[in-house]
Amino acid sequence: MELDRITVALRPRGVWERLDLGFALARAWFPTLWALWWLSALPIALLALLLTGARADWWGILVWWCKPLCEVPLVWWISRALFGERTPLRSAPGLLRAAWTRRLIPYLLWRRLTARRSFTLPIGLLEGLDGKALGQRRQLLSVGAGAGWLTVICYHFEAILWGGQLLSLYYLIPNGLAGLDLEAALTDSQSWPYWVSGGCYLLACSVIAPFYVCAGFTLYIGRRTELEAWDLELAFRQGRATGASGTGAPWRPKADSRRTVALAGLLCAALLLAWPGPPAFAQAAPPPLPEPTAARALITEVLADETFGRTRQSSVWTYIGDEAADEEPSAPRWLDGLGDLAVILGRVFKTLLVVLAVAALALLIQRILRDWQPGTWRRRARPATRPREAVTSLGGEADPSTANLAQAVRARLAAADPRGALALLYRGAIAHLRSRGVAIPDAATEGECLRLATDHLGAADAAPFRYLTRDWQALAYAQHTPEPQTIAARLTDWLHWTGAADGSESTDHAG
Image 1: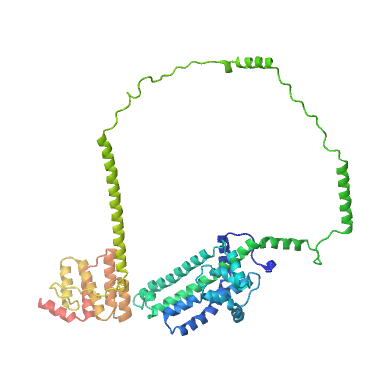
Image 2: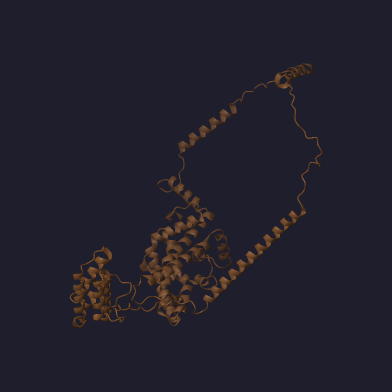
């Protein structure tokens, strides 16, 4: 390891700080690592397609199992980029040949499902150990590495990205276009949505792989820094380089300097020998103890003081009766039995509640299992779009293209109901547009209906409907009621537009 060339600061870091460093490196190198991942993943995906006979389920399993083949080139590239050597993408074939060695075989067989793959890959590929030595080295470095959590987190990120892509394709495709069947994308391996699901998962793996490999490598670097004290070694190297002379030889004192240092040492030794030592201080003799008689007199004098010699009398009340006679009478026995009964009933009710809760949970599980039976959970088919019923005439017939609607509109005008008349006329226009092949959804707004009519019929042919829509919007939203003459004019335009003008006139004359 050429520690002098490392591009990150070597210092003791916790597990989560090492992961954060790996994610930061992945963000900085993401375009190169992402492209390098695809350079190895695309050939593997095409080869898996041939080996599985274009079966989507087996193809997905085989590509997922071969993920270490895509991660090893990233480990090889990162191990050099971290020490200042950036391998260009044009050297990718040579990088793949150097990375795909026999040391990768365990990670495609018995070590494929290990949760510490991102951490143990650098140990097996970069340190050149085999057999028992490799196992001991892996066991030593793996203590407290935290690589298992990294695998769990990255698998969750892959699932979130995969599911997010599927839901985006499902919800963002407009109505009327071929949508994505989520159930088929997850269960039907013979359908095209299942292939879309596999492609989305491969894309999610390509996004997460640089972060997974970089974080695992920084866990490996951090563990070696902790065990081998790389930070101290690098500090010593830098200190030695700082003190080196221009020729590269370590600094040594000159002859004059050595002579001066020797004279100074001799002078200090002579001073120490001539030093007489610290002055001897005479120990102070302890004060003489007083005589017993004097001590007693002193004690008597102290006790004679008011603080020590004062006395005080106090009175307290003390019960002198018979304690057994004054005890409170005990509670009746039936009250004790009632308390025991309450305790028993409480336990019974508690047991009943637990039984009811277990029964409810079992019933819920039974319902869920029943709904999970094959073929029961399917996407509900949307009911076929049924055109709105035509406006019925006053006689009960549903034929908005004839004079029946005209009679109904005139009857509403005669009854001073301009809103009802204009509503009937507008609904009749919608029915006429549908009869001419204009596909108008039930939830379409007035503006959408006008746009569909104009696109299908042309601006000139849809002019009567445009004027009718303008009057209806003014009445429905602005509360601006048109004059009865205006509604009658719109009715005349509608009759000419639908070709029922002659029939309406004959009907009116007959009436």
